[in-house]
Length: 132
Image (tube, rainbow, N blue to C red; front, side, top):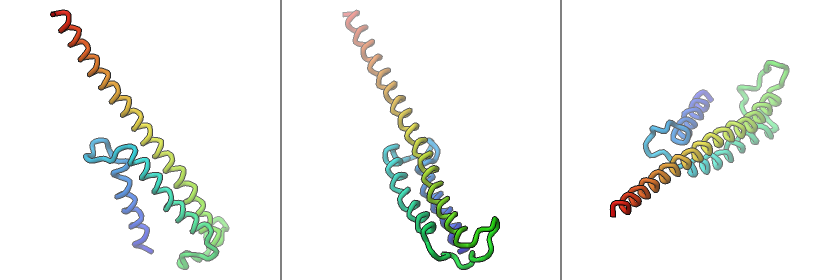
């Protein structure tokens, strides 16, 4: 159990850094791939939360001791599963909105660059015609 939780954290960091890392990162996946990847990642996250929530027995016997706030171990586990299930969806949806916003702004920047190139070509063509 003491190795499981750090492994979850390390795995999450290894997965999410390329997806949500800085713009300076080389070989960063495209926004479409990042959105698809995050959407697919929601499935196992939800499954784990649901399994914990719907379990009728305490999954970690070492946690089967009196809990604060008057919850018995099974209620505490079900609350944790429900929080994991719901909060993961909310957090992932928020990150997906950030990625979508980045995607839209990058498309706008690319559109402005293309427009500027077209304008420059049109100006050059107009000047060439004026000289001829």
